[in-house]
Amino acid sequence: MGDRDDGLGLSLRLGCAHYQPYSKLSLLSLASHPMQNLQQKNTWNDMFQSSDGHLNTRSFLKGIDVNRAPTTAECEEEAMMKMAVLLAMPQGRSLGFQRSLVLEETFKEHSTLNPKQKLALAKQLNLRPRQVEVWFQNRRARTKLKQTEVDCEYLKRCCDNLTEENRRLHKEVQELRALKLSPQLYTHMNPPTTLTMCPSCERVAVSSLSTSAAATPTSSSPNHQRHVPVSPWAAMPISTRPFNGPESTS
DNA sequence: GAACTCTGGAAAGTTACGTCA
DNA sequence: ATTGACGTAACTTTCCAGAGT
Image (cartoon, rainbow, N blue to C red; front, top):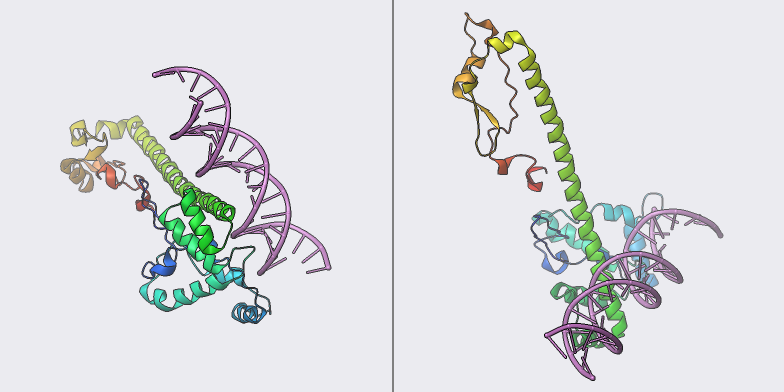
């Protein structure tokens, strides 16, 4: 799974963008390696040994944000070390590190295989064609699941933004109604012409006359301290409003 | 050209198993 | 030692597109 940049502006980044050999690999497959050698396992034990003497691979994994682009310094050493450890971690049943690596590289090129490619890959990896086929099926499923999770998060953020905007608009309506129902304020209001409405977005904007009148009330008209509730984005182009896109929320 | 059958592949769902905390 | 969570390999079912008749 490589970087993705679709219409939603979403992208998935794994590892370090500057370190290509590992950065594009799936963490799922990186974590799968049947390192059954006892001697090497002791090495992993040493590396993951926690204070209480137990192995702590999950906490180690927590230190890696697969969606964050690490700094250059991290890329060169820390990320390298972490990825190297990930690559060697035994995790469940797997086809082996080298095989997974080749399968991943092949998957990056094309997520589906024609029969000829499948046979060639199976021969290269000393696997049955059926195993290669199954691996690609499962890999596509994992990719789709991951993408679904990302899309779901994006939609959730959109929903949150709209909810907040809805709440803000309700408050604004209430304030406007209160303003209209107040006779004193209503009679001393400036003419409606001081409020202008954008013909394209139909948002009310405050003209320079009204804003100056509101900001600097004269001694002869103290009641001119008129509050005009205008949302902070009223004068903003639609495309730059906070609820208009995923990039504006983070 | 339309209707039907066959076949292969993909997706979705499920199961079994190994590892770890 | 046991258990639940998690990841992966492998299987089953369903659907669909393309080829052949």
